[in-house]
Image (cartoon, rainbow, N blue to C red; front, side):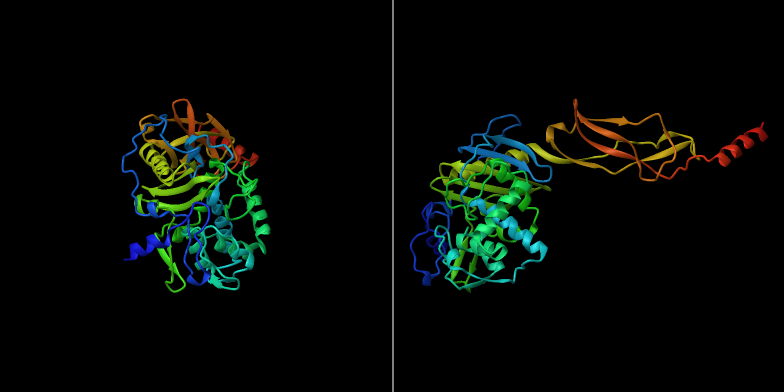
Length: 404
């Protein structure tokens, strides 16, 4: 029965919500009736690195958040309308406001007439209706509610215009140089553009905030004491193992868009699809990207490879040699086929001059795959060594004469 109710609640058009009276408090989201319970294509993606994936979209990219490394891309720098994946930046600013203590999850926000006028995906807020930040985040993330998103933005910046200015400022700080936001919802507007590459950047930044996953991993929830049921517009949450988020987007101009994140075996990936022709295209495309990443890449912990004590001669010091310490391991995102191709090269002078401070970098173990340096492990001083003073030098000379 619950599933039937969910299906009925999620009937919507591509770019606008169905017409329902505000009193009914029915949620209007980006999901389509035919899309709710349709599983993903179960065909396993076994493409090796360098092969082209069959992704039916204008633009696609796969990025690893910790390193920012691009694992796959196709036309990822074309400027396109982003639809509701715009909300990734809106949500990032909300997360950062919570971190600063400007708001918290229990902060109550009263909806303005402007927020209630958005249309499209919405929870049908009425002017003056109050909800907590927690409730509005549920609406914005799970159901892609435009009214809830604007209400959050107005609370942080005083107006949607002010909030959009903050969005553009943050985009520049993140290096999203092909992005311009005109609104905080993603509703089609002239000049409201971004790229798959830029969406991947802000997606990677957003998922650093673990709080967002309290919402982006939820398949179903409700508001208004259960009277308004929410169903996640991202079907990967239900059908793809390890999904952590993140956001769908659909308008007549943008087509079907998706930023999908997933975590497996300690590695999280962000896949972005823009300009898909159908809803199934975006989900299957994101699945292919994520499958490709998990099949071909992993984090490898590489140690120094040093089996015996490593020392270096010291000139003009109170000790003639210095024991070196290799500082731990380095974690590298590498193709799984590269594990047997790793080489280490020691970079170290034959001797160094005193004084030396404990912890000072003396050299390194450089990590290579073929001719490419992919990382390094520092070699540091294991102890202090003072520079010889005149008196200490004289004592050494005198000691040498006496022992003759």
